[in-house]
Image (cartoon, rainbow, N blue to C red; front, top):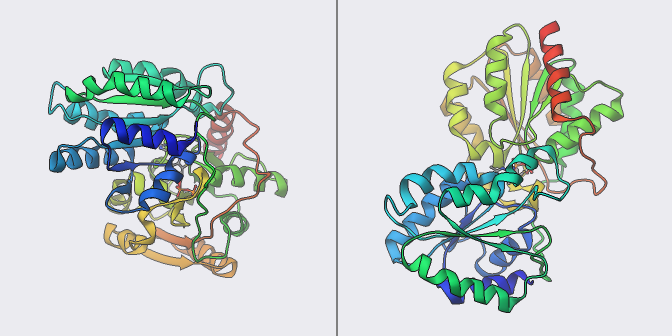
Amino acid sequence: MKAADFIDVLEEAFGIGFYAGVPDSLLSPFTGEIVNKYGVSDKHIVAANEGNATGLAAGYHLATGKIPCVYMQNSGEGNMLNPYASLLAPEVYRIPCVFVVGWRGEPGTKDEPQHVFQGEITQSLMELLTIQTVIVRKDMTTDELKAAAESLKQTLAEGKCVAFIVEKGALTSDNPVKYVNPYTMKREEALREIVKGIGEDIVVSTTGKASRELFEIREQNGQPHKYDFLTVGSMGHSSSIALSIALEKKDKKVWCIDGDGAALMHMGAMAVIGANAPHNYVHIVINNESHETVGGMPTVAGKIDLAKIAEGCGYRKILKASTEEEVAQAVETAKAADELTFIEIKAALGARSDLGRPTTTAEENKENFMQYVKEI
Ligand SMILES: Cc1ncc(C[n+]2csc(CCOP(=O)(O)OP(=O)(O)O)c2C)c(N)n1
């Protein structure tokens, strides 16, 4: 089904006029059409995390009495669960909302390890939350969707929430959005410079293509993977993982390679890092001002000053880079420093089309890494 038709049906049936969410590659035809229609505006907010999106949806309903729509990858269910269960739920404020959920790891399909369990529990979790669900399958017609939407009208009128769980490939678009930013150095080029400069230090890398590129750079360099903990899921938590490693391994340098979307998703972690201020911790944010991995929808990182936030949180040394030379220089400075350091790297959008995925399992990655951390 065309994503534009899907949006028309939802808007006609439910009167939706506000969207908030975190993008998902599987939903990119849908989010692209929202961008085509509303841009990024007060009718369409790219949220920091799915809980943030759910809060925004609640505010929209309180202000207008109308029904909001929250979109997300199914990995965001955990983030939305708290504001759903303690704010939107009929047992609390009874606030209606339409969730559109990308179904990664759908049982019977092949997907990455971080999506398998979440994929298995996606629908049952919604049911546990008493959110009525409709599965949007690849062969669903617009008339079938209209009938499904019709059957949900009463539920929403009662102030309850509903969810459309979208199968991979079910929504398509003829008008994909091409996202751009003003920077020239690609994330992978920055990563190559980082790897060159850090030697055998410990690395914790973030969710998405940054970890996939890091894995391939190690392969190409003939290096082992034991230095790197690849945070393939749990977006936004790599900086916290790195913090407690740094606190335990005080005589080893620990580098967190983060993304702007991930740093924003759980930005409170930066305050906790700053307050603990381990001298051996370097927090790098590769800021392409977008969720590049899942299609490039902008984050708000282009409109705020991450380096100033780090400074305000108590990071001692703040460095910036936007060319390979500047990255090499910043990495050298951070390696020599004996204090909590933040490096903001401005990067372009885009990645190699032949980029692979880690060939070792998540558990193998953990075991190699733990063995290395134990030895040093
Ligand atoms: C809780 C959660 N929501 C959404 C996603 C889907 N997702 C995977 S990577 C990614 C974008 C990450 O953006 P950023 O940290 O800026 O890194 P970039 O892809 O730009 O390198 C998103 C939204 C996810 N994995 N987890």
